Each structure stands twice: as structure tokens, then as C-alpha cells.
Image (spheres, rainbow, N blue to C red):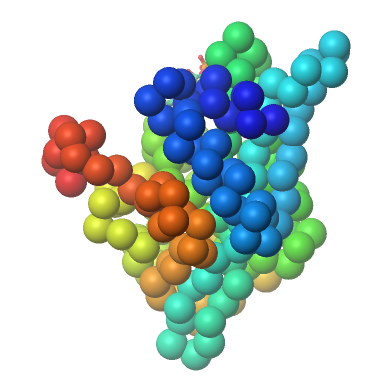
Length: 174
Ligand SMILES: CC(C)(COP(=O)(O)OP(=O)(O)OC[C@H]1O[C@@H](n2cnc3c(N)ncnc32)[C@H](O)[C@@H]1OP(=O)(O)O)[C@@H](O)C(=O)NCCC(=O)NCCS
């Protein structure tokens, strides 16, 4: 499974994202890890859900973060990414999570029902997350008071997998 993560994210980011996967597992922060296999039992897609919190005024709210989402380069553009997103959201709903957050290209996620989280009352865990990339899916357990800052669990910080650092952030004008 780590192989598909490394292949999808490439030589630059792959090793760091694989470290995140291992750190989330080791910390007990993983809530779901879903894979898609090819006909010959090779893992060609993977998505992970882990615990984080929304620090609302009334209470700390358990939420989920969807990261990473990986499809092997040779298997992309066949709907595997969409299927993994659907499976992850079904699992998040089954787990009773009120919301799932992610950092991602709005070009990919906005057409799949995700919304910019900022305008809905959430604050990103870092100023290095470009506004449009900070996205959320609200689930049936969500209640209107559950807004506030998203607080990532520790492995995201330990592996430095939060937002973008310069020069990529600078190029986006963040
Ligand atoms: C993003 C990713 C998971 C999509 O997986 P996939 O199986 O190809 O996704 P689907 O087949 O469901 O959808 C493919 C469509 O999304 C589009 N797409 C992929 N990445 C996109 C992006 N960043 N912005 C806009 N559209 C994107 C493709 O062009 C394709 O559209 P088309 O079918 O109209 O040509 C895959 O490209 C991947 O693993 N990328 C590298 C890792 C990554 O960036 N993960 C997401 C981090 S948030």
C-alpha cells in the first residue's frame, strides 16, 4: 500500500507522504485505510481517514481528515479516485463523523461535492494552506454549532505534512 502512495506522489513528495501514513498508523490516529486492488491483486489505490478535531466554542468535536488519496499513475483517470472518495465518505458516515476535511486541488474536489471550509466557519490549521484548498464535506451528524478551528492530530506536524512551504506557496500567492 505504501508503494502506491509513493508512486502517486512521486519522488519529491512520495517519501514524506508515506511517512505520514506510517506515523498516523503508529500513533493510533488512523480511523480507516481503504484500498482498491487490480484484477491481479495489486494495490492500485488507497485512501486514509484519520482523527482530528474542530475546536468549537461549545466543545471539542471529533472529525476526520482525508489524507492521503493515492492512485497509481498507470491506473489514473478510470474513476478509482472517485470510488475511493465515495468509499471514504461512506465509512466516515458509518463512524458517525460530522465532517471530513482535506487539503486538495479544488479543481478536483469541488465537482465532487466538497466545499471551501472557510466560508462555512472553519479555520485552517495553518496559514500555509491556501484558502481554496481547505475543503470540507459535512455529514448527517453535523450540527450548526460545530464550527471553529480545525486542529490536526500530531502526526501531521511530526512529518511536516501541513500545507505548502515556499517556493510552492509563494507561487500560489499564499
Ligand atoms: C488525484 C488522484 C487521486 C485522482 O485519481 P483518479 O483515479 O485519476 O481520479 P478519477 O479517475 O476519479 O478522476 C480523474 C479526473 O480527475 C481529473 N483530475 C485529476 N487531478 C486533478 C486536479 N488536480 N485538478 C483537476 N482535475 C484533476 C482528471 O483530469 C480526470 O478528469 P477527466 O476524467 O475528465 O480527464 C490521482 O491523480 C493521484 O493519485 N494523484 C497524485 C496524488 C494526489 O495529488 N492526491 C490528491 C492529494 S489531495
